[in-house]
Image (spheres, rainbow, N blue to C red):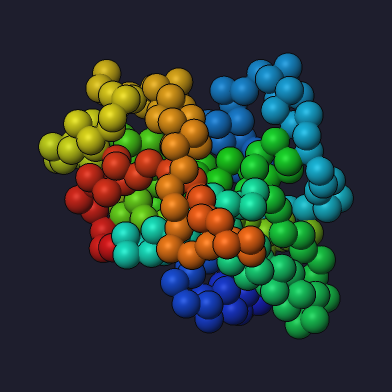
Length: 240
């Protein structure tokens, strides 16, 4: 697939409002830091629920970044086993799979968000594709949107020239790190991300659902999980 075809794919992805697309080499993604820190046994355990098999000999990955502004919290609200933002990204991914097949005869596959179900480590992939860098808050920092992004990926069977990682973008280098003080569980207090502490807050969010501004089909309050985003909102990079 030529450079021009790859540019056409990115342009097609970016026809969707609030979406940016970039391409990564799947071999580079599978050699990224998150994969290197996972043991074979842990990998097997993580993929115990894998629901899909990847396209044979797939070589490229389209990474989609969706802007998630502060004024649209509902994109991240979890109900009925998913979030509306993830449903939207799924719709876009599937549309791009169809476009690749119809336009170029290229087979592609929309991957699930969860690694354990057949997805990829999206932050690593997004860094390789030039969509941002990993900040000291453990979030992907996009040069325009800051950490206010959500990610999905599309596996592509043919080779596409990969996008380039960002250069000279180090948003945390002179930052006062307000994210470290914002976390209610002090998950960043030691200067690095402590996942078990973060998970305590997420479990609290899961238990203490909030009432959405509408009722369900039976007239009862519609409750959703509103995930904590304090470290994200504390970050001074990007626009809401």
